[in-house]
Amino acid sequence: MKAATMHEWLDDLRTATAFLTRLPMPHPDGARPENFVRAQRLFPLVGALIGAAIGLFCLLLRAIGVPDLAAAALALGGGALLTGALHEDGLADVADGFGGGRDVAAKLEIMRDSRLGTYGALALLVGFAAKLSALAALPDGVVVQSLVATHALGRGVLPWLSISLPNARADGLAANAGRPDGTIAAVAAGVALIIALLVLPFASALLAAIAAGAAALVMGLLAKRQIGGLTGDVLGGAEQVAEVAILVLLAARLG
Image (tube, rainbow, N blue to C red; front, top):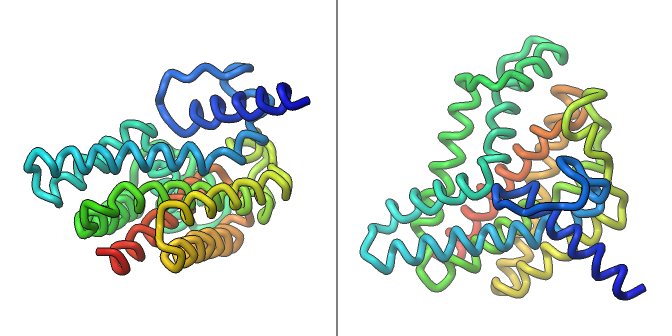
């Protein structure tokens, strides 16, 4: 039983890594493995590793004399390459759809369109500028820790958001991927919180977790009102809003 359980955790780690990054990570059953829903419990762990990679790259750039603002921009760009800008794409689609659609059908159709509109461009610009300035304001001693917590918590709230809303359409990523249960959502939230508590001061970790939950709640309420429920883009947008909220909060407390 223990060997089988360990095998499941390793399968989940490979699946989560393959989905959340562009690393050549094979997983068991092709593009959408059967364990995809279960693998969401390890999204925060993979997020923490992404945050660590971005943070270490940022520190390396600072160490060789790159100005803090430029180092932050290059590190965030490197992070987008690592993840394939998966969540940024969701944020842009949500902004375009919610901002430009006349009704639910029009909003969903715009969100399917791969072209970037004005609202999406502005959302990406504001989000990147907020993260850029916050990261540049963090001292060397907390850069990696802050990014680890930010990326873990930003992904840790996604399973909870998934089980809190109906699907807005019958097809698409959110509908096809399946819905996690309360246990998976609780494990994901617990893993994210533990990671944050391990790398941040206690009060900052709790406030960061609250910020992540608030971002998911706001995005969920907005999605329910705008399109009646959940899409994969909504999940991506929620992750990005959470990242911005957490990183700005930590820059204000630790910078």
